[in-house]
Image (cartoon, rainbow, N blue to C red; front, side):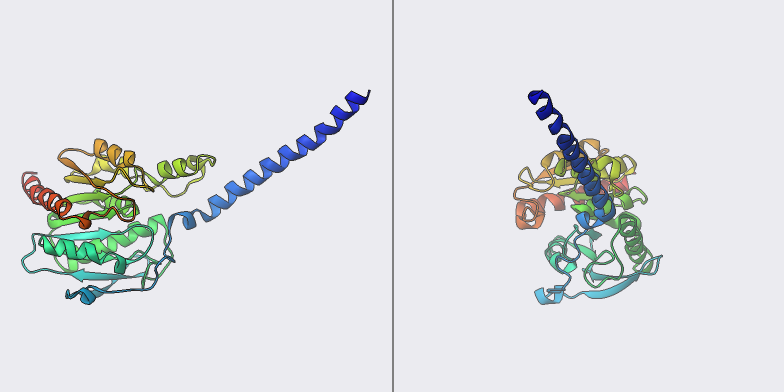
Length: 288
């Protein structure tokens, strides 16, 4: 009797523990579902414009881009004389365009004009970031380049950094562009989230997709994948899978360094490889 009494007393306690654990997990999943944009977008990390191209001795034009849903985006146009092409750059999920000036300076050195644009909610842009919102922002930047500046579509290079690769690939799948460059980009937000949070049902609750790898099936432009084996945020295997999924012509540039310091402009040999790819992409576009 004593043994049976002790055993029976433990059953309700264990049941209560299981119920509490399940409820806590359900609440956690619910919070993630409700607030998942906050796990993806970090505009608060660097709202302040810390510098401009003029700070580095480079002339530029500050422009305001109106989106189809009424937002105002802050962008910088950094032109060069007799450009070899024009780069539309989409940055990652933190900071703003003032933290990407080195990209514009790099492209200027190799002969390309650059449009840097902040997504809604970033820097001086209005609104709140969402996945669909970033696509609408990309459309506004594309329209300004191709209609206001009258840059031919096939002279536009789309450059996406990290999350920006998901935006750039979305746009590249819809237009005849010169080239698509994916720097430290994930295959999809769902893939990366599942790896970072294996204890959560990311594939079932995620509203944000940024499905770069599947968009590559519709990209007819030459694709360059830039990735580092040392990337501590987006594993190198993502870059390798993107390269494998891209259609020909394509190339892969393996760099070094972590996610936030393994940047193509850091070493001139990497810049030279990028310039070579862009020069070859002009020939590829001409043959299409």
